[in-house]
Length: 122
Image (cartoon, rainbow, N blue to C red; front, top):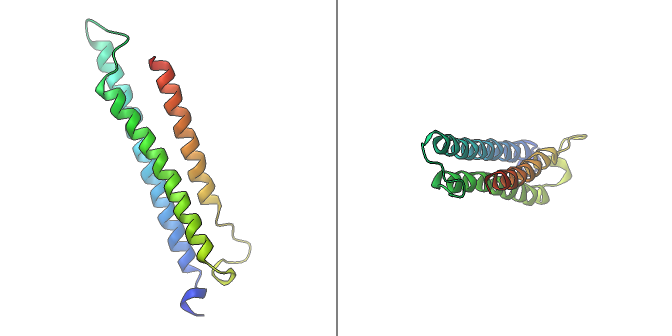
């Protein structure tokens, strides 16, 4: 079995994709916590200005959007790697696109969370 016919190449690329998936999840979770912490601080203040867009809200939303973008970009990169592999490198019956689908769903959920939080804030 030659180097280019080794399924370990596919599995290494898939591990990288899933590492980016965990990174994306972490960024989204941190952004959500940051946004909610900013809301808590606003609620604990004596004078609450409802129309005020806080730095915590902006930064939290940025982390959520950035996490979604990381999920999309990593899916695109994985798709590019899959195009370079031949049939010998993919084990029979193995579906390598499932990890990509998970990242795309994560990006869509990140976008939905962004819209929801923005709608609740305004």
